Amino acid sequence: MLTVNNDFVIFNTLSRTKEVFKPLVEGKVGLYVCGPTVYSDSHLGHARPNITFDLLYRYLMYLGYKVRYVRNITDVGHLEDEVEETGEDKISKKARLEQVEPMEVVQKYMNSFHQNMEQLNVLPPSIEPRASGHIIEQQLMIESILKNGYGYESNGSVYFDVEKFNQKFDYGKLSGRNLEDIIANTRQLDGQVEKKNSFDFALWKKAAPEHIMRWPSKWSDGFPGWHLECSAMSTKYLGEQFDIHGGGMDLTFPHHECEIAQSTASLGHETVRYWMHNNMITIDGQKMARSLGNFITLQELFTGNHPILKQAYSPMTIRFFILQAHYRSTIDFSNEALQASEKGLERLMNAVKTLEDLHVSEKSSVDVASFKEKCFDALNDDLNSPVAIAHLFDGVRMINSIKAGTEKISESDLKVLKSFFHTVVFDILGLKPESATDSGESEILKGAVELLIKLRNDAKANKDWATSDKIRNELNAIGIEMKDTKDGVEWKKASPRPSPKERE
RNA sequence: GGUUUCUUGGCCGAGUGGCUAGGCAGCGGUCUGCAAAACCGUGUACGGCGGUUCGAAUCCGCCAGAAACCUCCA
Figure 1 (cartoon, rainbow, N blue to C red):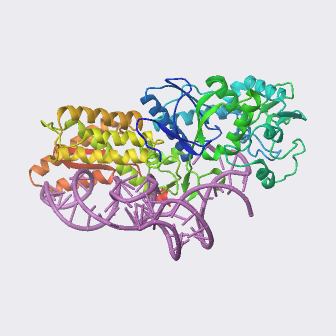
Figure 2: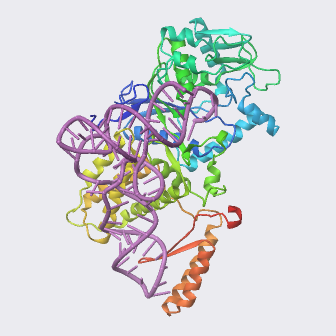
Figure 3: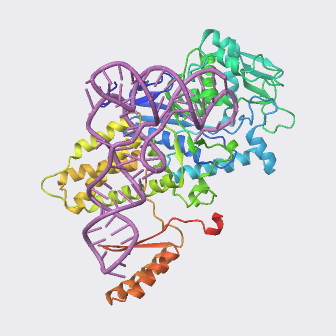
């Protein structure tokens, strides 16, 4: 059994085991993660890998590594159906439907993706290369694959010769399959006359006359195959060998398998040392996917504007929800689960606030050091954020007990506890306090609500419960929640909920 | 059909040979004019049937159910 002390251990899909992470270059980490194809609004599914690898990025930085984090934007070459020759580029299709330029589609959805990521407090990567900006690099890679004999040209398109590659290397090693199985189980479809074998994949596609996104090449006016961009751009920015490649589990085959094949075919060796894959988000036990018609966009989640949503969920609630499951497990979406996360997060954040006004004692009755250690042990063990969070809740109880006076903490321990909480909650888990009153009208709203609170306090002082309750109830009805605490009245805007009409 | 994985208390989710994660809900209590909120306390659950073992939710086998990949997907 693997014991975790100070080593950071991650699960490598390639070996199917947890391995101690050792970077190629001392003190530095090269990290590549597959980014989105920007042809529509980003959805709940996009939150998972981006938050997972944001956690990894943050944790590596916490460990003191200088990290170069590359996450691409796919803005060309991702076909609607890779197998059918009739497959249309996703972005071209959207552009045709919306009657705009493909690059307008790209810009629009890239912008909204960036906005959503910022809302989720996902740090921007160090480099965010776009496939369309690296056509030359991709063409050069095709040339070297051809030169090494692992590709062939056919009617202006270039395909990767999987069978040839498999004679010398192992096609299928990442996804755990072998070519014989793939041959036995691949659908034979019409219209594949260009390819030697159905499992060969495109490196360069000759563009049909109506295809808008096209670049000149020695083979044809066309565009690069989807898998190629990641091989070309990861090598360009991280070198011929780099530390970690991440992405969603659904990309393992064929996308990442093809990446390995391309890089190996052109360079003669593999580039990636650790492959990491996050699991999927499910809805009612089924993967969320556009094709299944059960996807929810992030914008819909944040506003609550979707038939299956009982309320809006804040970006931090989504983030916390995702962090409460291990990244290699599926996580099942439901209103109940999201509401549980919302409340749990609030409890955690309140404790962080409480940390600021704890009274110190001469000696501690709590064990801050061992609590801290347990938390980092969990993170070191393949980024086990749910266990780390479970320990944080032990810390919450600790903080509340100190506040209540049933436990004591020394000044030095409190200092440690505070900095620990801030580091883990804000820097590593990437959570941030959310205030419901930061909109433009907040100053006016604030003044009005505080006036009403004053009136209510007067009524309370006069034991005029009818008036005081009326103010409370009516504010409540318009979505302002009040709490009578020892330190006075606190209030906040409740999470926006769709009106009953909208919910129908 | 092939490959792989999963099945944990009302819900979500960790763990993975003995030391009963955690959150939410529920229940009890503290607080409060009342309420809400908050806080404190509280739950021995691991699909079924066999086997291995001193001991299994954890390992093995079979059965049942579900999912993912094999086709675009995060």
